[in-house]
Length: 138
Image 1 (cartoon, helix red, strand yellow):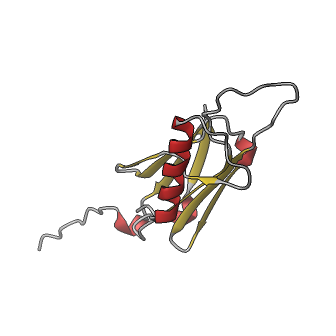
Image 2 (cartoon, one colour):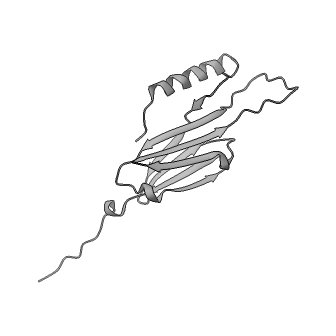
Image 3 (tube, helix red, strand yellow):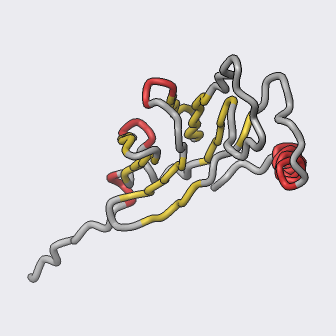
C-alpha cells in the first residue's frame, strides 16, 4: 500500500541523528515523509497524514493511475536578530505516495484538513461492495 523508498528512509534516519546531536538543519531542498495512519472500514480507505504547522493552501493531493500522492510545504522563515539554540521541527517539502488497489475509487477521493491533520477518504468502488442477490423461488 505504501511506496517504499529506501533512500528516503536513510535520509530520515540521518536527519534524526543530526537532531539528536544538536546539528544545524541542513541547507537546501529536503523532502520529508510525514507520519501517516492508514485504516479501512466499510466506507473505504482512510488515510491520515500528519502535517503540523503546514498551512492548508500549501497542501496538494493528486490521484492518478492507481497512486494517491500528497505533497506539502512548511518553509523555514529565519528571523533577523534571533539566535536559534535548537530546531526540532521539520521544515521543507513533505511528500508521501500510496499505491491504491483497484477495489477503491480514486476518482472520488475526499480530502479534509483540520488541526494539522489531512484526512483522505478513498471510497470503495461500487463493484467491490457486497450486493444482496434476490433468490427466485419457482
